[in-house]
Length: 204
Picture 1: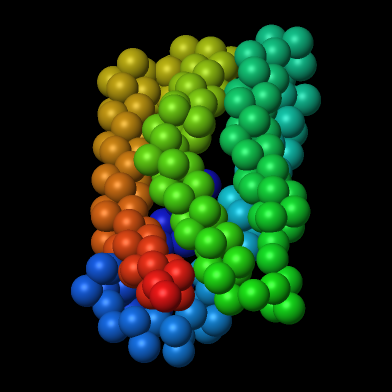
Picture 2: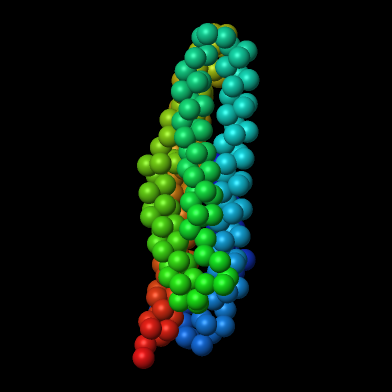
């Protein structure tokens, strides 16, 4: 599951200028930016949920081939589906919180600010609700598979497993850093810019 898919979509957009942004330009581009952000979140949620379901199906097939001895893979599947459920929940929440185009601009702007603040919390906490359970699922799945392999199989070599787990840990750390950078460079400046636009709209 690759959170960087969302960042790729965002990189196709101009970096937000934050509180330094021109209010007139913010008024002009708000609708377009709002639609782009909604589309990027949709792409992320669908892609991540689909990947989680696919991985779970593959693990279920491995468990079936291993029989009763592969029962720990069921725990790995549960962890993976738990993360998948977050993205499915995000889709349902986004649909419920959606404000129609007929709503006043200020109402839509406040909804977008609230959504971005939610996305910031989501991304900043991904280590706990996403990376940690997925990392545990990888460890459980690999150890269960290795246990069923013949003694001569390299997959049972502790050095091989240690190197693989280290690689996964480094990969997860990079993903964690990249998402925090996305928050600093894209989410927080856009919140600041739209809060500035909101203040301008509320000004007498």
